[in-house]
Length: 422
Ligand SMILES: *[C@@H]1O[C@H](CO)[C@@H](O)[C@H](O)[C@H]1NC(C)=O
Image 1 (cartoon, protein in one colour):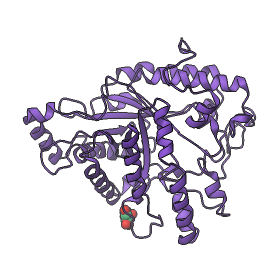
Image 2 (tube, helix red, strand yellow; image 1 turned 60 degrees about the horizontal axis):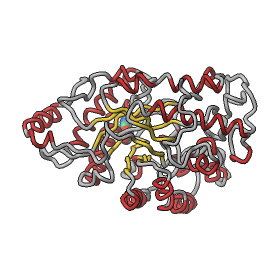
Image 3 (cartoon, helix red, strand yellow; image 1 turned 135 degrees about the vertical axis):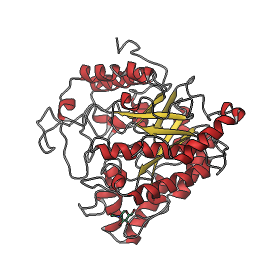
Image 4 (cartoon, helix red, strand yellow; image 1 turned 180 degrees about the vertical axis):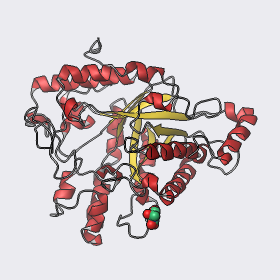
């Protein structure tokens, strides 16, 4: 697969540059590059994740319901629709947007699945998310927050994770061109929806976490898809007129240096890079001491500050274990306590996850230090969006719980440990 834009995009790029005034007029809806992105993800709302809302899954009484696909396929449509509708109406409301704004944040990233837009034959997804996407845009507008629309699941699954909608052993998105074309069409739809509203929806992230670690084929399809999505997002009018919407590509789990020279100026504009930093999804990582977790994130600063695109750390967490129930999948255990297949016990998960009322004061102090180390480090790039605003029963991940229990400051620039990275 060619690692350059399809001809149509190249022609558009050249036309765009020839209209010098329109190229110079590119004005994103937020001053990326001069002000820091500070935000939260609204995970577990329009794309279900068992660990964020375990009750939705436990209430099915069926242990084989492990993702949104099986939520649709393994129970009656009426039951699933009723549960989803109640969830959509209650999990996130405008009060959450107001609280996010009051916490001094400026962005929310909203994951949504392809199935909100289009469901193919044999796909059991239940639709109904789009009115909530529109509500979210209205609430962000009312509250003065910037909304990032993040396509979190693509046909065939781009990573096989439950949070792509369909937990599968081998991702299929990249291996079937129909899947990619369907995804392109959805990005065009989203880009058209928001093209005249960059103030409130400044960014589209055309695909969350494609599994670049699976194969070279995933990376090559993903790279072409980023180029094609640039055309779809930056030229949504069907003419040489550019939008002011930013394309937020993802590093596909590669070092940032892998993407050197991809979608960079002067041929391209309006592109930012999303990288996700977790220190808990392998045995060696959960074996790290608290100090090692902190030094690991502090060690990201130079790669974030030196990359040639704006870099936003679009997912990260103050959690330093994988203890949260169902975090590794419904019915799957944790590496930290040795209940995950092939892991060796590091310690007990008691007091590491669940309700903040069970957290010791020294653990809460660590959460604050780890949170501050990440905020300091990620602001060496363009900023950060924490995963996530709220979870049913994993307060170590929850921005809302951190605010309520003191390990996240009411103003994100009020640091207690400004020298935590040394
Ligand atoms: C490719 O994916 C589409 C759905 O996007 C499906 O209908 C088709 O059967 C798939 N083709 C192959 C060869 O798997």
